[in-house]
Image 1 (tube, rainbow over the protein chains, first blue to last red):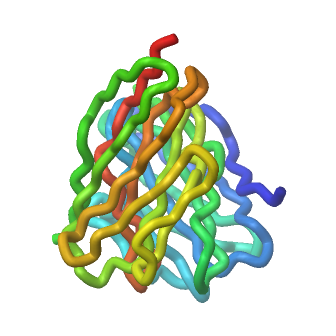
Image 2: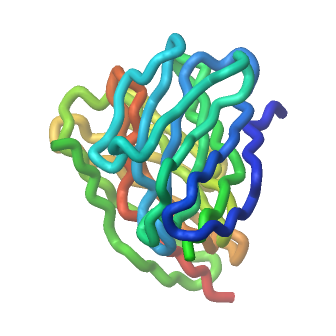
Image 3: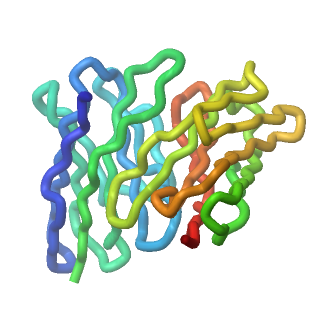
Length: 114
Length: 111
């Protein structure tokens, strides 16, 4: 079964540093997403990406965040200057579009900002 | 704004009993309602979903019901087993394919 792959699985970074989280969505999927989950809380929408541009973003997704699909396969989330409250599990998801299919989530990147 | 409420937040049942988790959504444009199971430290996994033109769907021990008028949908697990223990999330999805998740239910099945 096709998978969404995320790397790294765990990243520890100093406050103020930039991090890039990487995702390889399923190859024939058209919609791409980043979600985050603070420990013990619900999964929160960050951003959706379709047709090489952001289609929607949440209030969480401020100027410190950016996404890219640089080469047609990777889908990256960059946090420019990390804060302690950015510590969370970040999930990438992809979706083919149309009817009858749910998202496929990646296995997540646990980001710890110290 | 868009919101999905989920109850209960924790649920303990004896093995073999049924478990019911309920969600209410606010966006009347929502037309797709997936349920995810998340084991500790792992990604959410889709277990069942329902579209707005259907009132009920069943897959072995798992069923989902939808009441569009009341904006309620529920997950029913029958004959629960210890391996059903996990956190379950409902979600409501509109035409933009953005998932709004509920707050999660921690289900514990006691052997």
